Image (cartoon, rainbow, N blue to C red; front, side, top):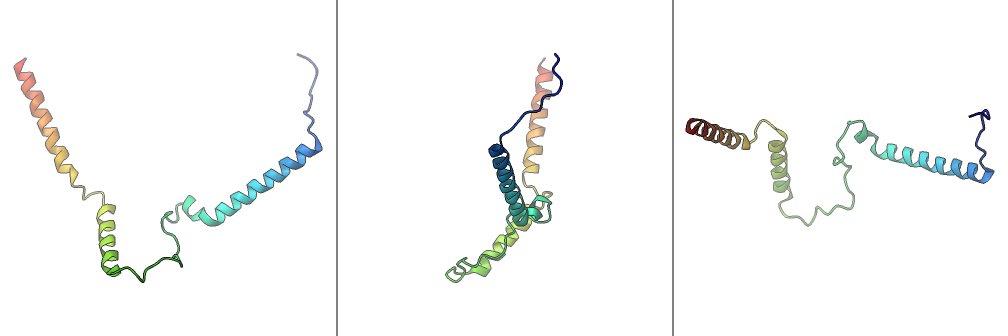
Length: 107
């Protein structure tokens, strides 16, 4: 239980390798922060990328109609209050309550 403090000794090679790998890690962190910091902080969504210069829009017929359809779809799905399944769930709940009442009456 004695012996005092004893510090671990590390070779010079391991120290330099540790510093090099630490440097690479920080480079990677700063690179990812440069590209994705807005996503991490919630300022933008990950699918909101800049325009793709290699995207092929010239060969798509009726692209405007497709974009309008997609925008309408996105608006409908973004509103959680317009859920079509709510009525079905309520009907299921009522059926279960009726079955429970019938079971209680039978006992």
